[in-house]
Image (tube, rainbow, N blue to C red; front, side, top):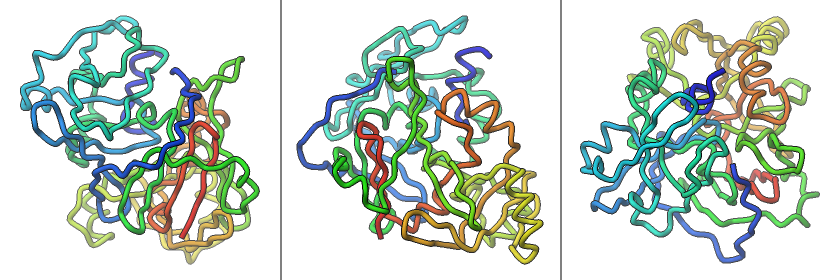
Length: 330
């Protein structure tokens, strides 16, 4: 697979930062979408504020080309080559004026090692990228490398985002703290920033991707079934084989047919994470191959789906990429 296609995937889907900053957490300016997904608000060198869609399960981190042109940033763009593709980019320091916003980890496939945002062309974004932008308006896409090397608090209950909030390794025995997994090289350095975690559903322990940006792109049928005019809503994903088991074992669980574009959504009454059981939680079906053949390229194991805002909205979540721990709180 072409490297650029793999790493610039915005729909589904590095250098490892090992230093641990001991200072207090920093509250970031943010904006939540119906309490279940969120933007980081980024003040720029031009005096504008851009909305960065926060997606821990996303591929790249980028400023969209139309936004760069509209905000007078075109003269700050530079060029690099990834594989056989020429791609524009803008340095983090040339764009971001707010010192609270942390710099971005540099992906291993990018020859420039300074913190930067890619500025992919519409051709590179492709049809899925265009659909994403129409369904989830945004100026910047904040994918996995934005979150790597840091510790975060995503407080869905109070709609606040903090960075530099580490989890003490001595607390790892807490039943609501679990280890998260990452794909690494032979030396133990993280190659990607897609965290795996565990949930329990219907008595089964499932490995899942932690995915703050998981979204359903609603069909007209889906909008009617969900009683909304929104083009997208926060969701979670599940492998088709697990979905089939749920439908077989629980015929009373509600299924919204063809609601996520042409894919079914199922309403799971209860999801257990640590000592907490929450619900209902909506999951959209994805082929097993989406996890076993696609996401496995950037994850430490084959997962069965992704935990997104339809489940995370019930929690205050801490995730520490350096200590490789995640904590769920109420």
